[in-house]
Amino acid sequence: MLQAVRDYIKANKSGRTEVWICSDTRANDWNPESGRWQALRDAFQEFPQGVRFHLPFIGSRALVGRLDSDLLSVSDGDGISLAQALVSFGLDPIKIKDCQVSDDVTGYLEFHIEQGVLLESEDKSLGVVQAIAGQSRAEITFTGRARHAGTTPMRLRNDAVAGAAEWISEVESVALRTPGMVATVGDLRTYPGAGNVVAGQLRASLDVRHGEDAVRHQAVDHLLAEASSIAKRRGLTTASKMLMDQPAVNMDARLCTLAQDAIRGIGIEPVSMVSGAGHDAMILAERVPSTMIFLRSPGGISHHPDESVRAEDVENALAAGLAFLRNFDSCYAPPVKEQSTPHV
Image (cartoon, rainbow, N blue to C red; front, side, top):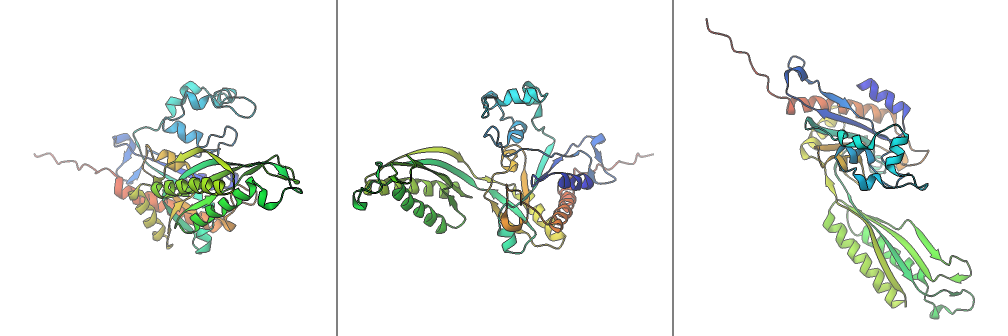
């Protein structure tokens, strides 16, 4: 398996390696002499981002039974549904139900680059993910009145951009004063979008993430109320639309401890982390005890041609993975029945 992982990493740049740990106490699947799980399979899933269909984690959704007819009907930009794409690829959507993980799967370990700068900033090679942050995404529209930029005095403007700019500053302030929170306004669309016109409308995205759902919800509620307050003071109106409310997902505490012990066992002190990005583990955790090991991301670059990983960090991750499996054996191996000696 180790060589297969190395070959996969050389051939792929998905930033992710996954190991499935399966157990079965039947005699033909358990080797008491080697003390190793025989039912061990590794799964490498592609395309978790869901760019084409704007539907992430398609494979993981199938594995937990959440790729239903509604999701299969989602279409790409050319009007091709996910179901049609699967058929064109030679697959049968009807058989997706057969992909669900079975009860013999006792654990899921995912390796992934951090996609951030925390590990690098602390000069650490590996981290263990304790939870995957919940996400709120929304669209906020500020509406004022479009007027000529040269003939409208500043005091008489109902400038949607100016109102949004004040609100964006508050988004940043909320995140800065809330430990563990990140908040982003990454997309702005102005209307009519001319350089010599005071914008009459602006649509802004909002992305808020935190490891605790209550803290995240409180921040989002505050920011939406603040948008309305700013708009009212500036003679604007606002409208908001929630696009996503993804709850935080805790990783399995026992597997997290095993991962930390495994990393310490190879002479590295792991960093305890909350992932701000979504991962397959957050979907699989519904059905399978899951955890993640993060690798350092040079420069924190992700989803970019310059994304990379250090070779020594990969070697450390592989060594930690093998140590994890050894630790897993000792914690989860079924007891070996001793054969009784017949009395003569």
